[in-house]
Image (cartoon, rainbow, N blue to C red):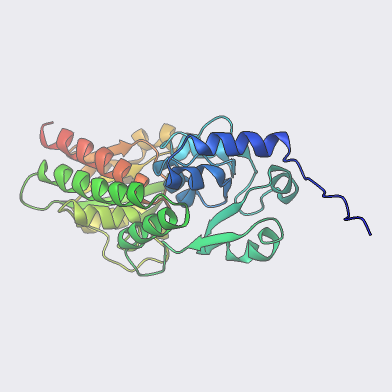
Length: 297
């Protein structure tokens, strides 16, 4: 009997181009470049970007660009809609190789795993300062994506930058409230289990909010609570609701606070409240600049 014909399967054009591009890269970079990653969690999204990974898709990108601000998200990334309810059909069309989430989105895992493998990291736990967890998440993501060296470098550079920024502040530790305003009479206080509170400590400052918080913040709290530590400065993390920005200058309760009367209040540019190391660096820069301005005011 004659031998059966040998079937030759030629690779399609996309496969050939991918192989050609990978051949031009170092082995580790080629593995990372070949993986198409989508992000549901903003903290994981900013960490991807910090490691030089451009995600193919992520959630609420218009808001991310306004609130998290940095690192910049490439325009090529597909917006999947809400973090709490992403567009699964669109995600299926994008066809990522990996989807990264945090523990906040574990409830989505069954749906997401129908589309691609899921990689999750925990950064925020009630009562636990998150900075060290953000470091661990960065290193774990770097390991997963073949960016170990980049992850280690980013962790080290972040620690050095925060230490250097802390050295620019007066040697006696100042007490500082970090808050966001929900309306003209109430605020959210960021405690020790927030990234802002953890970074304050690493800068050599003292968080004036000492009560326990749950997942970063206590809310709502009446403005009068800010008078309990009259020597503390107040850092307000943007954005402010439009009506609050208009009403604060004439708010009698606000104007009676010692920090307000003595000019120890600053409004910071927006920072991701549940961010990872990029948000830690951004907050450290904004906070130290604001406090330095007060000390020279």
